[in-house]
Image (tube, rainbow, N blue to C red; front, side, top):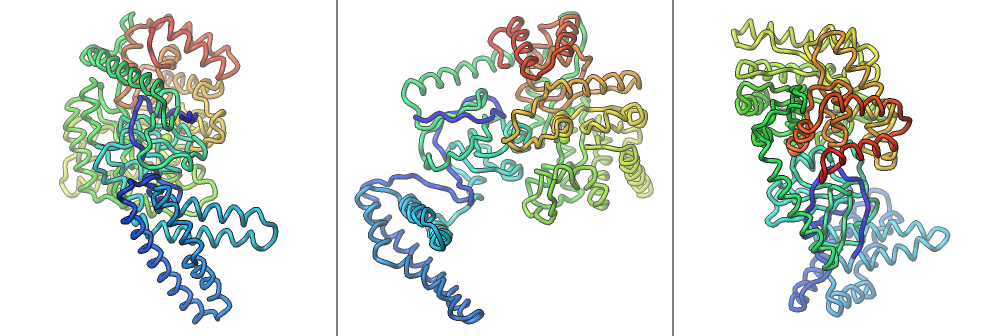
Length: 579
Ligand code: PEP
Ligand code: MG
């Protein structure tokens, strides 16, 4: 048994078989094969060696012709090694005697060769990369398939990968992927956010561990504590089976709150909205009694398909969501691409600091036809229900005005063509950049509503990349500097009489609920999965109590002190709650 600690990003417990994807994107299968499969496996190895050999020979001939014989010799050396008796004997022995799978035998043997070379001083060390090249070639022929596999599965699995991009996560087969864990990735990454949309436990930032596990191994994923347990013993397995059952019972208990209002003990009504990334999640919001959609991350329409959606694709998605929510508000955020949210062929942007680069509203203002297409579709959907439009990552007044100007322009266009839309559609912006907080009185005067995006506000306040596990110790929603900015934002909004909510992950952490209520927040937008838990807390507290908590917290100096105080306060009021 091996216990690994990572960063918890999506709650719950999952127990199941591992599907391992290495950092080249290859699916690593079982380590061992059955005794009676040995003959077939040896044939598979034979075929892979022949195919890889033919490929290397073709390269050798082409390079010799283009560049001369001395370059062709590099490939000749690869060929000799691949077809040499010593490598072949070693691989065959591993498969027939130790019953290793050919993939595992190839990786183990060639990586051992490479390690020996890497330890030798001088030019031989450089030859290690030749060995990795041969390994990759052989694996390609043995495995054949790559990452796309995870979109089409036939049985339940836990995906263990070096990394998953937000678009890969968006394309996971949600019927069979029961959880995932990655070697890299940080707490605010969009990969983590998609895990919550899929309602599966996830752990990121585990560090290198894929060499310790192979496809089919039994794994436990604890998304509450950020643990991954490889090959668990019977006692641990029994403990987690019990835990999974407890979580299921707790969720069933909280389900009973569905039709009760999110109202504090002293009678203040709180708006409890859902965050969604995919239209199918609207059902999760309805099932859990959401008061509306506070954030629809429409960029997932681009990430899922890997290309720019047409106006009709936008429109169909919005129709589905707006109609399902009936008379409840649906806040459609215009696309927020760039940084870690790139479409699969999004490599065109060569930026050194993508989170400080051409992302979000900046990208929209540069891609006017794409922006206009989306605005047309949102406006067309606005007659079907209670649509609100929200612009992300506004950092200057000018940017907000430009975005609104495009909206006005699209409205005129629809008017000219006699296409109906809701002329008074509420327009809001996200508060995600400290500059916006400092200018919020002026910005608020030009919008109908505001929403604090803490995921970005934290990263831009503390200068810490939300997707980088190396600096996770600095990524603290309750850092006093972040809390001061939230306090300022709420005060600005109150002064300007503009409603303000919060749709960043911070509002989805139960221990933060009393603090945020105490700071004056009256609208929470959270992943649908946690709506019942947050509602339960709201219904257990009074605003006076919450103000007392926020006053104490504002006098504290560190996130650590604040978190431990908030956890104690929550435990006092609601036993058995996740913090
Ligand atoms: C945020 O930044 O808090 C937010 C809600 O937007 P996203 O996570 O999509 O960047
Ligand atoms: Mg954001």
